[in-house]
Image (cartoon, rainbow, N blue to C red):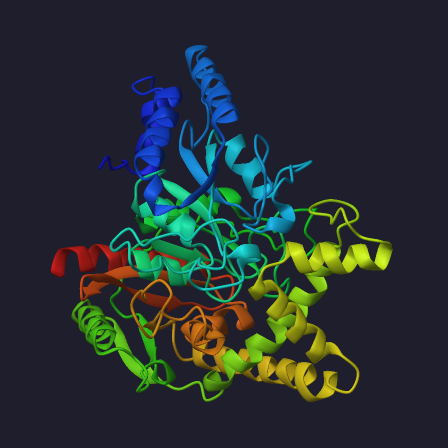
Length: 477
């Protein structure tokens, strides 16, 4: 299988004329076609990608610099609005939808010469942790076709590990970048909430949605973040990026105060993952980091809190898909109300309907105070506990998931069991802190990821310590 060079090296070779953007795009198409059986890709953006590649090659021939990502192919999760093809969110209700504009992050990447070559599969509307909830296909794990790649950005993660492109974009609402990264052995980065614009990305839960990259290494993730981060007038929640580039990575582990989260080392943790985490802690200590156990008492409540707040926001955000303005519309309705009912009941899948019903219930009269208001109170408590922990520690670490990738079909009929997969990732979203998953080991031949979290807006420092551990781990394991 063809492996890609680092993103920086690829763009340098394109800008120097050593490699052509057209050849890179064709290479990406070839690898995607050779690996169709993994069902990672919903659609290939062939015509527009080749046109952009030719444009970039022409710029370079004319002596112009084509950008920091010149000719680099990438894959966008299919909830990003893009030109040149359809944007479906892997749902039948948007099966034939063509975006009238592009997501801000897509535009930023294209301005630096990157080329979107395909749209990746996902759990429909990003509702799920296995990519089994897609209305179109089930993506398979690159390490074992019988297992899931995680979700909801499962197609993006699988595509990167299958070398379909040097990087892919994902969204992370409760772990949807980090969890598939851990399941497939990719690097998955969830930035500080608001650091990357959500404009042009189909909303799931607006107060926890974050956009980030899936890559083969931390340096590539840092480069992509440096390009897509920053304020955007089209998204009022965005914040300014750091004055110092995110690519300026501090490589030292010595003297870093790292807390390993006690609540994530519970009885439900698979033994193989616990062994891998213990080895990572030992490696950190050998490198001079101070690693001690830390407790965040409210963490056991985070999952219940998330699955009240998230469906409430899902219920609100999905109300726009009513069969009237765009997307699927039932053609056999007898009146407007019947059109609403039939379009939504036929267009949405089971998981979307489940979350709409839960969300509508917790927001309804008589239940708002009992559920939603209490969940927001717990969220505030959780945010305070993270702040207190970060007053004593530079970083927090723990597993990404309690298990390695599970079998396709194993949890699909048990929503509670499926939701429990998110137990170690949702807290970072509720608190708005940056978090990363880096591959550290294998258990029963399946990848294991380590999760590292930092205080809000400390993304560069987080990427630096992740890079240092990545290099250290490569040398010692």
